[in-house]
Length: 606
Image 1 (tube, rainbow, N blue to C red):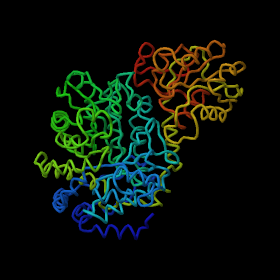
Image 2 (image 1 turned 135 degrees about the vertical axis):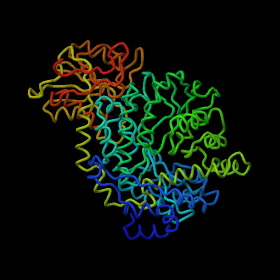
Image 3 (image 1 turned 30 degrees about the vertical axis):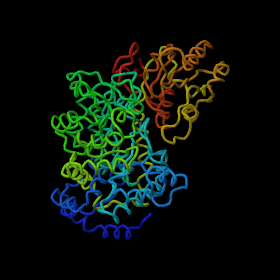
C-alpha cells in the first residue's frame, strides 16, 4: 500500500491533467480525503465537488482517440493484485485480454474503469481490495492520459454483495422497504459508501430502482424496495443521497424498469408488457426521483419494452429509450452505464462487435464488462474511422465520465490508504448501525398459534431446519446455523439439523423453525418438508429467508416471518423477534397474492 509521500509523487506525475481537471475545484473545496466513520454517521457528510467543465474539456482535447475510447470501457480483470496475480488469474487475463495483469490491461486499453467481482478474485478482504485499487490507480495515473480510474462493484447489500465480512453488511432493498424508513435507507447507503470509498471503490451499482410487481420475477425480487412506486422512489432518492454523501457515485438501475419480467436478462431477453401509461405510473417514479436527487449514473436494462420502442431492440441499445426518455423526458445529464455486456439479453440480436457501437449510438456512456474487450475496443475505433460514430459523440461521453470522476474527487485523491481501511471498514459503529437498521425489517406475517414469542427464560428446546442457501457475502455460517446460534444466545436451547433429519428429530421440541428459500409453485422438497413437519404435531414456524411470497406456496404454519435476506444481521433480528427481545416492526413492501396485502404485518399484540 503506498504511503502519503508516494501518493503525492503519483499525483505529481499526473500534474498536467490534475491541474487541468481539478483546478479551481480543488482550491475552492480544499484537499480531498477519504470519508471516515464519523462522516458516515453524519447526516450531512462531505459534499461532491463541482467540476470545471472548461478544464475537463481541455483534458479531453489532449487525449488520443484510443485513450478517449478507452475511457468508455469498464472491464473485469482477474486477480487480487494489480501486478502480481495468482498464476490461474494471470492465465485468465491472458486468455481474455492478451495481458498477464490487471495493471497491463488498464495500460493497454486506457480503461476508464474496472469492475470488481468476487468470482474474479478481486474482493478477498478490505486491505487487499484497497491495495488492488491503489495499484490500479498507480498505473492509470502514470500511463497514457494519466486519468484516474473509476473503480466499481455491485454492493447492493442483501442478496447481492461482492464484498463480505469484515465489511459491514446491511439488509437489502426489500428489507429496507419493509422498514419504510428513508432515514435508515440513507444511513445504510452512507455507511456502505464510506466503506467502499475507503477501499478505493468510487462507484456502486446501487440502488435498484425497479418496482417489483411480479412475484415470478427471477432476477429482481428482493433486490427491489417493493411494489409501491412512490415508496420505492423515496427510498431510492434516500440511498442516492447516502452513497453520494459518502463520496461514491450511486447508480440507479435498471432503466426503464425491470420489475415486471419473468425472464432473467443474464440468460435471456425479457419483454416488458406495460403500456406507456403503466410505465409512467409504475416504473418511471423511482428513476425520476433518482434524477431529482442528483444521481451520478443510471444503468440501462437489457429488456425489450415495445410500448417505449417497438423496434425490438433491448433498452440498452434503444435511442428512443436512452436519449428520448432518459435524457430528454427525465432531463438526466449524468453518466448512462450499460448493464454488463456479457449478459445474454443484450447479445441475442447483435454480435459482440456491434453491441458497444449501438449502445453509444443509443446514448450510453460507459460500456460495462464486454465479453471480448479487445474486439469491443477495436469495433468502437472502427466505427469512428468509418464515420458511423463521430469523435465528437465519443468526446461527449468522455466528458461526462470525467465530470463524474471530478465530482467524486478522484482528480484530488484517487489512492486509498491502509489507515482509512482500518478506521472505516467494519468498525463497531457501523456494525451496530446495521443491527439497529435490521431490527426494523423483520415482518411477522402470521401468528395464529401464538407461538411467537417463545419464552426464552424457560430455555425452550427449538429445532432449526430448512434450506441453507449460499451465503450472500461471507457471513458467519449457513442461516439455519446462525439462527440457532442467535436463539441460543438469547436463552433458548436451539439446534440446527439438516432437512433429512428434521422430521425424526422434531418430537420433544417446543417448536420447529423451518427456513425456506424461493419456494416454487407446486410440489417440491420444501413443501414436502413443511407438510411432514406439520404432521408431527410440533408447532412449525416458517421463516422466509428471501422472497416473502413463500407462505402462499406452503401450508399455513403456527407462525410465519419474512426476513428478506439471510445475512447475520437479518438472522439476529429474526431471533430477537422470535424470542420477544424485539417487537416485529416490518410491514410487507409487496403483496403476497392470495395470502397477505401490501403493508401487512403483525405486532406481538395482534
